[in-house]
Image 1 (cartoon, rainbow, N blue to C red):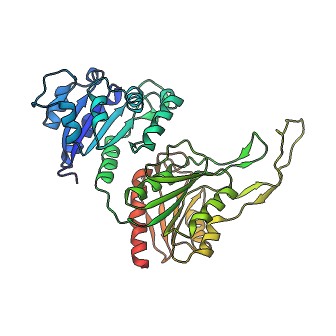
Image 2: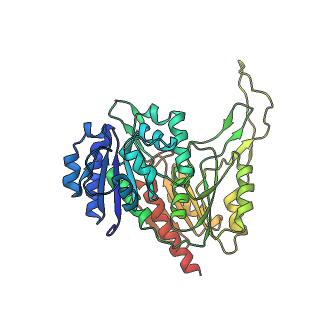
Image 3: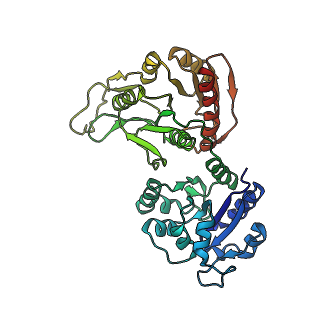
Length: 400
């Protein structure tokens, strides 16, 4: 899959450096030519000899070591690479790159390259959610760096939360998909909705849901990687905007409806992955509602059904919806597919482990208008986005 591709793997000083051994091995098996650059801290976790044996090439650890070839080595590697993959990317190396600091071989080479740079952050959860780190990642994402989000789980420090380096297979598959991406959506205008909406009760409180936006953001990113012009209408989310995607931020269902209708006429494909609130409070208090000894009653009124409205309005668009259910999955998804005039619906039971809100993975069934039902196994949401787009592009081809 990567025959002829030149990959520089940068390894910075975190405990997850041991996973980079398998990353380099998988890249070699995929046909890539691999060069490895290690920071001094990384050599405290894994020896350069290990990577030299696996990659088949010398490993660079020091700006001042004797070059293996007669050239300015960091410039030579910067020009040689088709892609830079830094895994693990610590808070330190992320901060250096974001701030333009080039004080050792890896940061200097990244600064000199015109190749695509991919970062796979891995660190303690509190470090990962630190506003300094999140701002650095957001800044890099906005200027075209590809960020592979970390997994959540038990970390080496004993803390459970985000910051775990994704499995090597996930990282390599992401790199393969980006490097070998096709152009089957080139020239197509794609509209994606993502995350949940918030319906205010007062200036402080709101009614919302648990959606993180991960599925919608993965779909928007994958569509852009396949050549589409992508607009994403997103509810509140902590995720960085995908590179190459125009993001319109909204909060309420009414705001999302208006933003979607503004873009709908120009769209060839609409993927409604957002978890839109079905109801909103009839009265929004202008002041914070104070706690009392008695009960309070909230009167809710129905929000507009954006997806159903699009189903009524569609002319040329392919319309894809999502159904997150807790019971009778196929019954509810089939009813929604037909009632809302969808071309395809992606249904998932959010009570299943690995398929709920804010999970990094999903387990879905894909339902089509012709009655077909396809069950997909548990996979990362990034991988699922690619699988779904394969099926959607086939629908678009057949509809022409």
